[in-house]
Amino acid sequence: MPEVVVTDLIKKFGTVQAVENVSLTVPDGKLMTLLGPSGCGKTTTLRCIAGLEDPDAGEIRIGSKVMFGQGKNVPPEARQVGMVFQSYAIWPHMKVFDNIAFPLKIRHVSSNEIKDKVRSVMQRVRLETLEDRPATDLSGGQQQRVALARALVHDPQILLLDEPLSNLDAELRDYMRIELRELQRSLGITTIYVTHDQVEALSISDHVTVLNGGKIVSTGSPRDIYVRPDNRFVASFVGKTNFIVGKLSGGPEKDHYVKVETPIGPIYCHGHGVKDTSGDVLVSIKPENIVVSDKAPTDKMNVFEGKVEVTSYLGAFTEVQVSSGGQSIRVHAKSDEVNFEKGSKVYVKFPPTYCALIAPT
Ligand SMILES: Nc1ncnc2c1ncn2[C@@H]1O[C@H](COP(=O)(O)OP(=O)(O)O)[C@@H](O)[C@H]1O
Ligand SMILES: [Mg+2]
Image (cartoon, rainbow, N blue to C red; front, side, top):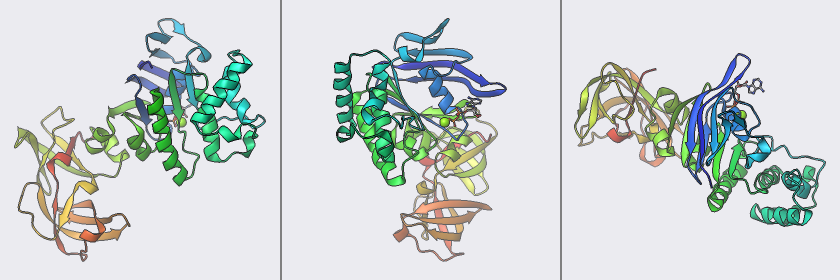
């Protein structure tokens, strides 16, 4: 399966710059997610790759073939791309079989071959028994499978999925997410997956590209994006986080951690993402990575004294808000490990590997 390379893609709608200089590479057989809030340009990027929108500038390559750019603009049906639309775009007046067969019919494939291919792909997505069902009689999950089967039936080189699970209820969404990932792996098909849901992006992807306002703001493995975000937008968009304002005081020290002076005291941080080592910075740490205890830990590095403001029991964990040095710090702790009175004295510990240093803007 080929890689997908997008270079400096630009797409405007009138005065709206939907996609601004987007460059990305999806390696052969991998799944990349485009993650970002509504309106950030995810669908437009995908439609440009599929050939359904004409970019204003940039280059799109699938494998060694230039699809757009260098004076070329290959029509969608010649790009060998399978796409699942957010709406599924299933034709209600057609039976399941005919919906799935459609991409083969427009490519003038013989009817015997159509039968073989449709049946084989239906088996793959577990729709075997529904061939003659009118498309209107399908559940949300079944419609999603029909859309997926239709995207795969013509043996595309790449798969483009636009929020394929957003119309399903929560339980089915979790289940289909795992199924989709397994199917993608077993086919080894290079895939771009669009979602606004960070949990979905983290769980399904090899690589995540975060978009905001038509621009790429970050890219990395799910773990990088989550644990060590490299800017403020990503830190707050992907999971909840605590921000503590501080000033860098010198370069790497103590096991390559950098020291940041903050209102709660000096915090040693991972230096990742910081180019300028002078001036104001933010320390970002996720609530579940902070340790809270009513006893002072023996290791004093990144340990701060505070007062419990509020605790909220949230089932899987308890959220404890601690005030320290005039800052409010949110901690997620195992429910059976915390039982603090409001106003009681506690210690919070920020393990340095989980303290990401980012620019304040
Ligand atoms: N056909 C269109 N005509 C005009 N504006 C559009 C069109 N499609 C998208 N846009 C605008 O481009 C921006 C990006 O949209 P879109 O790619 O659909 O975002 P996302 O999929 O991330 O929600 C939005 O501001 C949207 O309103
Ligand atoms: Mg969209």
